[in-house]
Image (cartoon, rainbow, N blue to C red; front, side, top):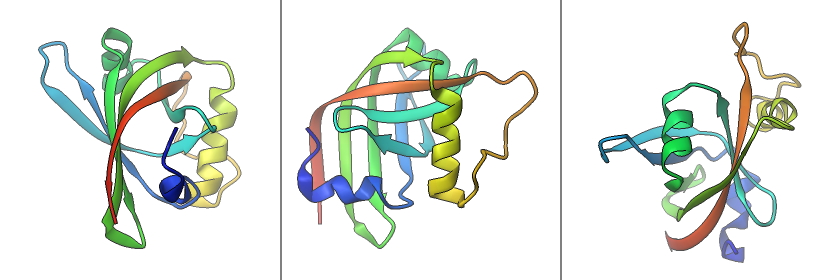
Amino acid sequence: MIPEKYLDLFSKKAFASLATLMPDGRPQVTPVWCDYDGRHVLVNSARGRRKDRNMRADPRVALAILDPDNPYRYLEIRGQVVEITEQGASEHIDKMAKKYLDLDKYPYRRPGEVRVLYKIEPEKFSYTG
């Protein structure tokens, strides 16, 4: 479980830096919007992107979420992607657009884009602040 003291980060417009592993083992980091369902950290992307391919090949990930109100306060989560699904992914990216952009619909969809939802099971944490 996410430490209760840091759950507020998921209600803020806090970006996460998502680290995945490239096929050669090197890390790849991408800023992402994130969400928490009470059990899993949720990240949304499009099928075929680098982070999508990386998480399908190796489910080990890490995220660092900085508090936008205090950059010295952060939560780092290490875990594994336990589910990759397209079901509910379009609705979820619209929910994230409301949270981060105050828009009802995600405005950056590309023609033919397939949204994907990744459920990350937290295993270890570090934090400060």
